[in-house]
Amino acid sequence: MPLDQAHLRRLIAAAAEQVIASAPELTALDQAIGDGDHGINMKRGFEAVLGKIDAIASQPPGDAFKTVGKTLVMTVGGASGPLYGSFFMAFGDAINRGKQLPEELAELFASGIEAVSARGRSKAGEKTMLDVLVPVLETLRAEAGRPDLMRRACVAASEAVEKTAPMLATKGRASYLGARSIGHIDPGARSSCVLVHAICTALENAP
Amino acid sequence: MSDTVSIVIVSHSQDVAKGAADMVREMVGDEVNVAFCGGNPDGGLGTSVQRIIDAIEAVWSPKGVAILVDLGGAETNSEMAVEMLPPQRRAVVVVCNAPIVEGAVMAATEAAGGSPLERVRAVAEELSAS
Image (spheres, rainbow over the protein chains, first blue to last red):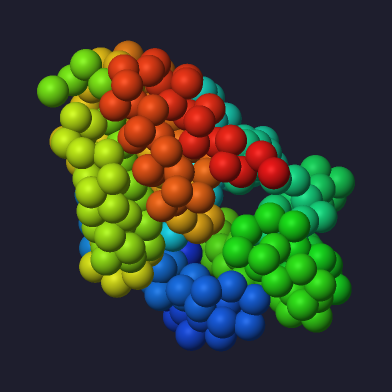
């Protein structure tokens, strides 16, 4: 059964609120291996999303996610704006092409990942948000049909974040640090994990 | 004037962007239109897709627009801004892989001579080759 409007609103609001709440942690991670603005940038973007949550939630789901993406593009102010923006715009486009949320979450995720990968010209293994999103997609596909699939996706995200610590960054700001990026969790991987937890928990608690 | 390629300078800092644009005007003159922008949507350090779009529109030339950027997010946001332009304009706007100050001066110098967009871009990007 597709998401109703109230549920869609709760999902998007939860994602925004949890990113905003995690801003201090994201900033601390980014100060270690980036330029320290990931938390404040993501907070600005998702506050803009929350600011028009009523208008967003009144749209059909595909358009709602596209508006979330466009809002992030226009308000974040760092590379994470176009990256997360492209994810949500592609996610919304996939819904508008007929993919169902939540039934085809894996396919929606795959569309989002493809857009992030193209936008950042990157792939998994380079210490970026893809190092969370790709393992989550693999879990969604491998464990499809299990009653606790959303929990498993959350666990996959949390485990994947930790695995970015020993990685060498070759994309994004952390790549300027070379070997000094090793030992730190990637801030983009962490924010992706926060979003995966928020979205999957909201879907798990579907009416 | 629109018979030359225009230049857009995108930095995380409005001051850096303005300084680079000042250098272009000083060294190349006014034959080439130069726009600049810097700062995130709140005015802090960062870049803004809307400001980049506005800067491109401000110096729009049918011969094209070459964008020079500083760090990561400036490039990603500039690429996003280009994609959000109308399709017929998108085709003649490029983000140059070049150092922002030297690239802007070299690109503007080449543009001032009436060179096409691809030549302007190539001259700026030669700075990154070695």
